[in-house]
Length: 250
Ligand code: 6PG
Image 1 (cartoon, rainbow, N blue to C red):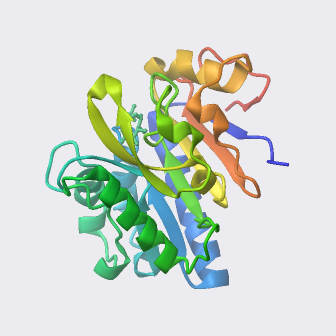
Image 2 (tube, rainbow, N blue to C red; image 1 turned 90 degrees about the vertical axis):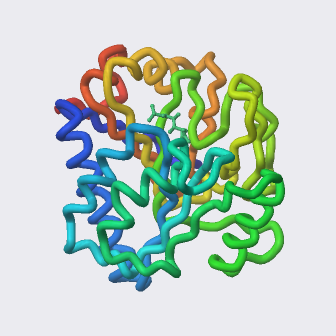
Image 3 (cartoon, rainbow, N blue to C red; image 1 turned 120 degrees about the horizontal axis):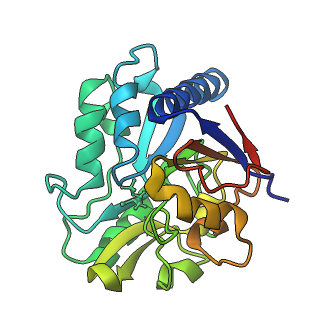
């Protein structure tokens, strides 16, 4: 049975990102100590940028032992303003001693998004030495929360929501008239830890729905790691609509 979510409410955005950085550092040192490496799938969007910038000020983290992946990507080249890779590279990876061979970006510059998704699946299968039907066990997957309840690029009413065999797919998002390349739920739910970050009053309504409205059927509600932690790090503004029953308040 998936363990119940841990919901930590921090006083404000500063404390939220400090807590997220501390969690990242603790998980990294534990994984490197016990397994010699740490594997993380980064999130895109605007919220994690402050975490990445903060982590870039943490030289003690064993950056050379970390494998970097992305949970999703926009169908754009790596130098495009919308590129999740570009954001993480500018805020973090270009500033710390990561090994270039340990950075596995999604090659979304390719014209055919399906090809991009298949190639990234292959990258995961080779890196994690997966047999057919197996899913990669990331140490940590970072996620944001979209205003419609999406996470990664698993948007409501899209085909990727029902994918149970593939690791990565191209997912057509009608409202943006574009494909996104995204991890599927089986990959998200195989992780040792999935951490959602949500900050600010704009997230209050959707956070309440995701965490406290069991009648809703939102993509983020389907993230329940099978043998891992589900950690929500949110600030008070984002938590302002929560009843408080499930949260650890500051
Ligand atoms: C992306 C993300 C997406 C994001 C949410 C929240 O590529 O956009 O992976 O899932 O996390 O849309 O975005 P904000 O953090 O900007 O609110």
